[in-house]
Structures are given as structure tokens and as C-alpha cells.
Image 1 (cartoon, rainbow, N blue to C red):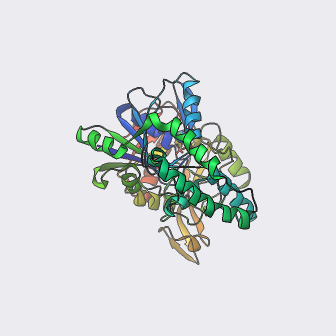
Image 2 (image 1 turned 90 degrees about the vertical axis):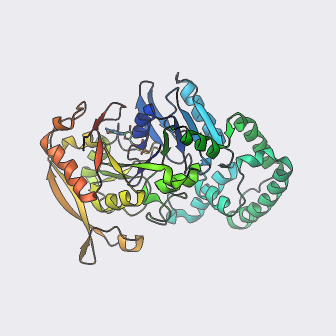
Image 3 (image 1 turned 60 degrees about the vertical axis):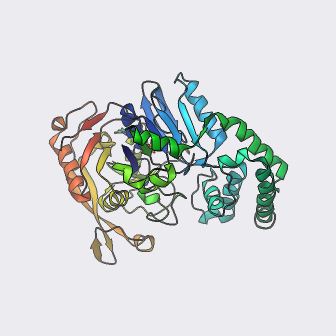
Length: 426
Ligand code: GDP
């Protein structure tokens, strides 16, 4: 049984928490896209952790945690992350790295920085983790696959070729120091020594696991609106954030993904630039940002303050549809308990017309939010475990959102901890 846990919005919906929770009853947890550019924050018995590359199943002894072929693998960061767990008494997790994953090189990080510098104010708000240069190289076929670390003759020839191309850009576009092939080769040798014990034919392992009835979680990074095809292009990430891509980025048949759990946050937040129709500003935003998430809305990887706004039914309905949602986990609802009234964005007004269909970016720039105010519940709902025990206005808020997005909300998360969850009988 393969299940995907993915985001409906701009990311930071709480996928890490939901994955950590579901991992209790799973055998394998697979990261299938993205890299160390974003993070999941997880709070459990060991403490509070920010994961960037590791799947959110690493806190259990029984799980196998897999870095799939679709991931941008930053080997030093992966090892630093493993150490950050074991330093805090988490048992060393079981990890496999796909032999088909490609490697983030030190020059990818540099190119990311150089390009942001060159673009100045017109930059894409990159986290400068090398992700865009990495995926560009992957599709330009000048990336390094983990398997290539074990083919020395091929490696030397390829390093020469890559350096020639990169050095033209470094010299003439960026005016920066050139790459030396021997340095790059040494970097690759170091990576080989580090990663060798973990390398596996991941799709084959997953094939066996599926045959043996194991439960596999595919863990997405970011959300629908950051997808390079279906998101707010060009303010998107460089790999697909959709559950469908889980089949490719992990190497499983698409028809094996039986459940798509789309994580949807009870209000909106986004890191970095890009269209965000229901965004709020000023004191109203500061208050939500301060109270939001677990200790404020600040990026798990970058520490950047997140932009915040009201729940966006248009973006979330679209976000859920593109994921192929079978059920929704509605998160961070507890945060809204301070509001007398809670505005919800139910439509976009574009050039005088109201729509509930999420448009392409050029049109999105003209969209103004149509807001409807729902009554708040004015109390702390953390600790509640039964849906029927939630205040009436809180249930009405959930049910209103559910009717607007058109997908069943089966889980309500009312706190950052593993147990802060209300399973809703449908
Ligand atoms: P992810 O990338 O989707 O995993 O999201 P992040 O980890 O970046 O952001 C979610 C933040 O919200 C984290 O700080 C979580 O600990 C926190 N969080 C998750 N679910 C809840 C919840 O139901 N209530 C509260 N208050 N915080 C939550």
C-alpha cells in the first residue's frame, strides 16, 4: 500500500508532522523530490527537529527511510542532519539512498548565489541551496548520478566536460573563480566514501515491499502552488511537488498510490516571493505570524519570516485537485482561536468577474480576494481528541472549508505534537 503525504498550498502546511505521525504504522518513508532547500519541523518525544533531506520517518526504529531518485541529494547536508539526530539521542536511523539520485555539487550552491546576485532585485527568492542549478544540470544531462561515483573512468572524463561548460559561465557571465577538475573529482571521491554504505537499488526494494504488503509513505516537499508546471510559475521550485511525481521520484507504479493525503493549513503562509492573493499585512499579519505554526511563522531552513494570509479556498481547492486528493489533513487550526471573526477567501475577483478557479500567473496578478467572515470560537482547542468536542464555530469553520474545497477533511491537527490530532469519522 503506497500513500502520499503532500501539500495543497505553498508549503509549510505541516506535512512533516503528519508524516511523522503516520510513520508509526508505516514500513518505508520516501522523499521523492526537492532537496535541502525547505524543511519540515517535527516535535515528538525526542524534542523539536528541523529535517531538510531526511524523510520524517527517521524517529522510529522500525522504519526504512529512503532518499529517492527524484531528490537533489546534498551529501554533506545529509550527514550533518543524521548527526544532528544522533547527537540528541535519536537512535541512528535506517537509511537508503537511491543509486539513481543525483548529487548537489558545491558549484551548484555557488551558481545559485551568483545568479541571485546577478539578478539583484529581480531574483526568484532562491534559498541559495543550489536546487535550481542542480535540476538544470540534471535535465541538461551534466549532473552526477550516485551510481556514477562507482565508475571512475567515466567520472574523470565527465568532470573535464562539466568544468569546461561551467567555466565559460564563471568567466564571462559571473566573473568568478574558475572550477578546477581535480577539485571536483576529489569532491566526488569524498562523497563516494560517505554515501557508499547507504546506496541501494531503491525502486527494486520498493517493488519487493509492495509485493510483501508493506506500507510505504511518499513524503512531498513544498506544495501544489510551488509545482513547476501547475504552480505560480516562475516563482516555483524546480521539481514537481505533486503526488503523481512520487511514482517517478521514488520509482513505483502510479497505480500503487492508493491514498493521497493532502495537507492543508487552516490559514495561508508562504516563504519567498510570488503571487499570494489572500495575503495580509501590518499589525493583523504580525499577530498571525507571531501566533502561527509552533512558535511563529519563520522558515524551517532559512529562518525567513513567512508571509501570512487568510485561508484561500480557491488556491486550496485547486491545490487538492492537482494532488489527486483522497483525503485532507487540516492543520494548525489551534492558532486561529484568538480571532473574533475569521475571514476566508472564497473567490478571486479578476477584471470585475468573480471566479473560484485558480488561474495562471499572469491573471493571478490581477486577482483580488473575495472574503467571507466566519465567527471565531475564541478558545484554545489544543488537547481535544474528539471531533464532537470541538466548539461549534470551529466545526462550522472546518465544514465550511470542506464544502468550498470539495474534498473530505478526515484529520484535524490541533497542535504541533504527534498526538495532537483528531481523526474524523466520515
Ligand atoms: P512542512 O514543511 O509542511 O512539514 O511544514 P513546516 O514544518 O515547515 O511548518 C509547519 C509548522 O507548524 C511546524 O513548526 C510544525 O511544528 C507546526 N505544526 C504542524 N501542525 C501543527 C498544528 O496543528 N498546530 C500548531 N500550532 N502547529 C503545527
